[in-house]
Amino acid sequence: ILRENSPELVGVWLLTVIRPPQIILEGKDKTVFVNFMDYCKTMHRQPNHVSAFLCAGKYARGTIDGQQRLVIDRGFRSGRFKEDLRRYILEYVMCCGCKSTDTILSKENRLFFLICEKDFAYIV
Image (cartoon, rainbow, N blue to C red; front, side):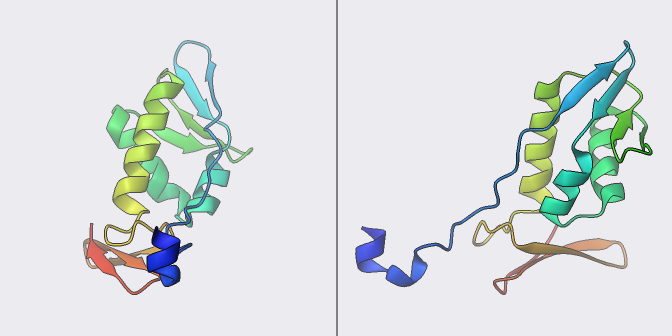
């Protein structure tokens, strides 16, 4: 129906496909997000912003090791990471107006602006 009535809108809702996070536990007290840098590159976000969001939600400290993995100093299951990543994408990656993931996160003073490549801008 959309294709028949509004052919100009077809293809607008194309979202970026992201592989599932690879989460492993090292011992009892370390969680490693193996494909962390792939996520940051796909979302076009700075690794320190993504890691700060993920660690703040878990009340934990995290570092990026030499293999470009995020190492968090507490043990968590992978389901929790999926929820947190989904929340990050909804708040800091996906445009509120058109649901596109082609966005830029800009910081001015203390505010973050989500700027859509399709001419929308929102304060997050």
